[in-house]
Structure formats: C-alpha cells, structure tokens
Length: 305
Image (cartoon, rainbow, N blue to C red; front, side, top):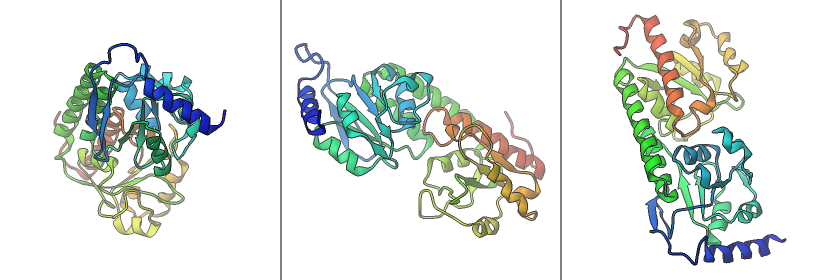
C-alpha cells in the first residue's frame, strides 16, 4: 500500500475512532511544552512515542498498555523493547506511524524534526510536544501524559513520589558549598550543557555550579582550552551505556587541572541523567554523592541527613 493510500485510510479510521458507536468518554485536554493546547475527545488508546525518554514517561504515568509504537533505543522499561518501532527519533518513518493508527503522538521538541511533526498534524493526528527543562517539569510531564491517556491516578502517584524524592535530595544538598562542575556529554566533538538544560538543574540540586552555564546554546560545543580555563573541580562524563568512557581519562594529561589533580573524574550512566524521566533522580543521587566527595576532600563539613 502506498503512503498516500495508507494515510487516507488512517485519516478515515481516525474520524470513526475506536468504539465510535458507543458513548464517548469525557474529553481530555492540557497544554504541551510548546504552549499549544491539546484536546482529545476521549483519552488516548493508541499512542506513538517519538523518543526513548517519552516511552519511559508514558509507562511511568501508567499509559504503557496504550503505547503501540516507539522509536529505536526505547529500552526501558523492558516491556518497551517488544513494541513496534517507527524509526529513530531524528528519522521517523511516517508510513509506519500511520499504519499504527495512533490517536496521539508524543514528540520531543529538541529531537524530532519539525517537518515530520507538521506532516502528522496536517493529517489530523494530535501531537503533544514534550520538553522538560527542569526537574519540576518531569513531574508535570507525568501528570499531563496521564491526563491525555486517562491514567490520572497512576500518573499522580508517580508525580507525587518524584516530587517527594526531589525534595529530599534538595533538602540535603542544594545549599551545600558550591562545586565547580563540568558535565561532558561527549568527547569528539566535545559537548556540554548550559544552565537552561535539565541536567544543569540536577547539578544545581546537588549544590554544583555549571562552569559553562552562561553559554547561549543548550548543548554547546567547546574546546579543551575552554575547560582548562574554567578549571572545574569535578568533571562528570556521560558517554554511551553503562561503561565508563575511556575518553574521560584524557584529562589526566593535565596534572594542574583541579578535577584531575584531586581524582575527581566521575561517570554517571547517561540513561540516568540524559533521559527526562523519574530515573533522573537515580542519576542525581549519584552525582550528589560525587560532588559531596569533592567537598570532603576540600575539608568542608559533611552534609546532614
């Protein structure tokens, strides 16, 4: 079947909707992270996720049973691995999306291509944009997705648990003496984050100060000279997967670099800090402990529990 015919079929099916002959449940609506109002005539029953972190958020919000399609690397929770894939987050297969007949697509503002999202909207597919920029936004994302999926109770419970854990970490670490921190997303090219990024909010939660926080770009490219000039007390590497990246040890070439001189070259698995999901607090707990070890080596008083 050609894409044109498939999309025509999808549009017709969307007009009928599941259970069209039955009384419709109440409409649901919310505001997405682009500021657009999203209204569904009934809670979504066929959801396509266009980013791995969105897949994880949907499951955490209790909407896992309604997810019918995901993108590559949607590997958490384990149930997500068996779902049909519609390409990668930067290269969406629109024909595959249409074949799944979604009544809601949840997209990633920074990762998905606008041209793909515009095509879906032109077909009448509701598109919810997700882009958490703070830890508070993660909890809000859970609540909004739960509202659209009709899983408000589960989503509210997950959001409340997230906020409670967030508050506990903040009470212990946020007001600790600052630690100059460089978060290294990648090595070649060398990429970091500014203070508008969600990871910067984690650094602040732990009492750290992002040494590149004032840069204009959300994920700027920088050079070695800039890092040496900033002279961070802690370098936190990302990389790929669970293994500490070999390139973190490149900083050992500069014995006068404070982070290296004191052995403060740290690693946190990227899935725990770079996915905008409840697991980011697992990564935050690790980062907070790492920055606390910097303070201990400086002779700062220990944090109170």
